[in-house]
Image (cartoon, rainbow, N blue to C red; front, side, top):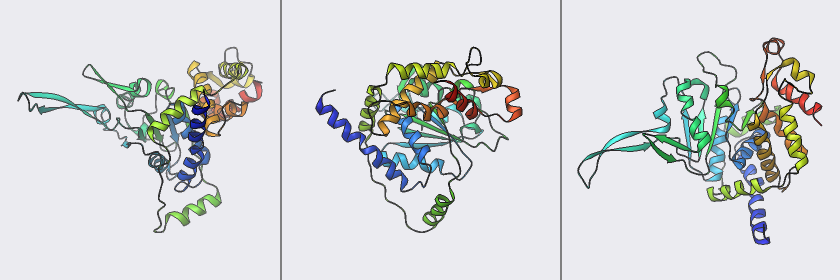
Length: 327
């Protein structure tokens, strides 16, 4: 990277704190969740947000898209939603040149830069699966034709952890395609007080556009160029392998684990650690990046056995033990 490119990238990276500040005008608290969503964007992956109603999950995503000037679409998942409602469908139109009727593909809401899949676990598996190709291949196949999705492309799905009646839990194969599984917690007392004061009046903050879609693509390229030492890659590899009960050095994992994370978890840890370094205006990965991101990356890739569920053991406890065990 020459000096001109380095100066340009430093200018772009310096906009990321501004972006977080801009989102903070509307979203009070949830700083860690906002950072993790931005990490997912920089790493070029998708994320799943889980939190009880009223924690501003939808508003967070909409605010981020406004500050990025990216095309935003929201899909409300319901039990009667069909794959064509997401992907699009063919409609019959008149060809004005020939006078014949032709089928034209009418693109669905999936064709946007940021797609909010709201309450994704409320729709049947058939419709959930319609998003798999888009999440992995960044294209849609319909009628034998491929339709490329716009870049950058980010799917942010939300789900409610407390309401399970009438829901369809995501299958493991689709969960694994989410780069991060982000859990939102209740705001602190001070933050909640600020929410009450700032959202019940007439004042509405005006958001400025901080980054364009082209600049986001450049930052995604920069993310992959961030330096990570061989020692840290080896640490990530050992951390992921230790999550598998067979041969794990952790007695805790052997006792409570059913199966562990696959190679995709290691790839996610490397990429997201690089993205976290960029978000913190660094050009090399440090161990803190890996340990902070181990939770949102591994929590949906580790399955606990029946005994663990009966005892109330959580995947976050297993991850904490992994971080203690693997040096």
